Length: 189
Length: 397
Image 1 (spheres, rainbow over the protein chains, first blue to last red):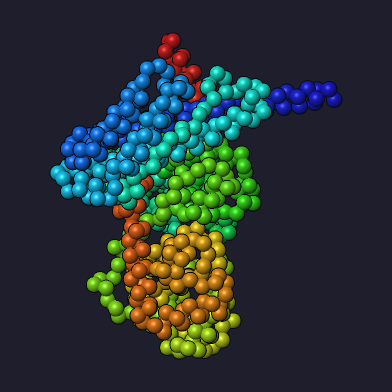
Image 2 (cartoon, rainbow over the protein chains, first blue to last red):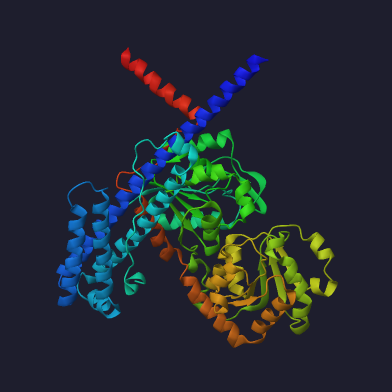
């Protein structure tokens, strides 16, 4: 009789251990997914600001618009390169603000007429298409990143995960909140 | 920048169907853009399989999500999925209908890396839950990005399973359907496409409406194209109505295109379960006037009735009125068909594929590859240990 109890207890502990190890594996995969998503978002933000800078310095924009875009793009690039840990909350906040400012600068500058004018200039159409495509990719990768963060925090909130510290020392994942809207005239391009 | 793309189709390659054509059209369009594409799908008949399709195993017919689906699963299918992932060396694997208990779900489990999914169908809540919440969660966590083909499909995901998806509508190869030189010589015919016994395709609603329609337009011919035995149905139809209906059974894709180019009106009396209505877009691309039930997916495709006529779902009277209104007024019918054609062009694969490529690029970083996932799998772990243990011994010797 007592043997059966022992076996049952051992089996239950084994199953529980398996469950914990699988959950830890899931968490690990989610953290990796977040890391990759952050890298992808970073790459697309960088591409967007470089294209914006190229657009501003290529002489196809009107001078006032060119200055606004160039400054915003430059600020975004500086914020991206900033000193210190890139996961640092302060760094992230500054970067998000700079990127949002770039979105606003682009929206203020690139209305339908401006885009049409740029498209007619040599090399202008490529720049506009490039800007639209990098802008769309920023939107997509930020959305996918935040979805991964949501899935991860949901799992990390579970009692088991917290009690057994299955997430180890990984920092609590943060969503990225910034204005990544495209100028309406560009979104339909 | 050419990519190696793996596409996974959960339903049999040999059987025509919405998801299957979506996967094949996506593959063809991606190939035309210079990407290397390989499709993994259940295959019944290996002969004349395109070289870019990999046989995922023989499909088994099982009831799934309200109809009979031909799926592949089991140990053998799992082995094929794993081999496909190992040998494919993919930059991205795009899984269609990721929770379908077939090659799709198996791929979610067996792969890691840049995985993207497209959600096609809408399920109601209970179905998603019975599918196993835990299984769904663990599979979905690995998907780096999700696409939904319709607002309905997106809602299934966000509401019932949890997660976000971007909306990218189904593509249609519009030019395959476009009539030559816009011939206006269409026959006075009404076309129905779909399984004749499947209640949600709504053939019974159409048949109930026919007496009212034929009363006004006696010279109308109704063509019913789709698999299924028509004997039982014909028995219940009065003689004079039956004479107006032609059952032509299963048709090839090419015949379907011809039919859509020839008829004046395509009718879609679906009662639900449709999440997009690709056949509506095909009909519009072929220049037919579309009359459809007002389920949400159809309202969306038909721009709330601007690109085709809508009627109250499941209401034969309303169907008859809608069909009669377009048959009676040639100008109105042509205007609807023209608007429909313009609408269809927005769904052309050449437009849609750019959005899909944007998704691929937004989930991966350079150098990222899809690899086999050996975690959480007793067998996989043994294999892993055996391989590594062996390696260590050899290293020591």
